Length: 129
Image (cartoon, rainbow, N blue to C red; front, side):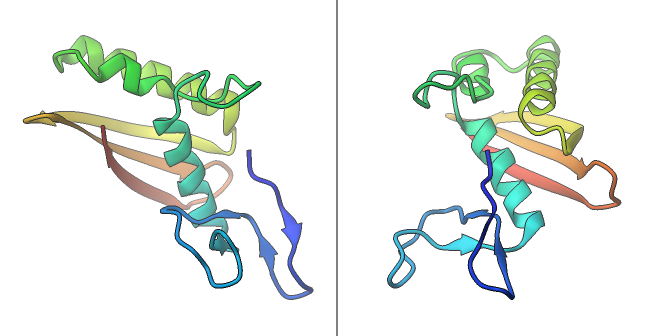
């Protein structure tokens, strides 16, 4: 998903920053921080449904799975399995360690703890639908 290209001799650009913001003469701001790029890629996978991108099966379909369902243990297990399978398929450099799902009013909240494979780097991503 991420394209790496040389901006100049000193820096390598890994990804477009999220959220999208105008960056002077560029349309999008970019990052050369590998950890931030991995986090942004995971966030994109979580919020993309299969079929949203033309000619690609990229996406987790988590939104379709949890959007109109009551949160229970079975649904949480389905979400964990679905996300783990999609991460293995699209982002083999990431390992999901834990997922917590909760709901409040009209919002589904997810807290995802993940780590970079072959590294000690771990992070927790919080997002909502």
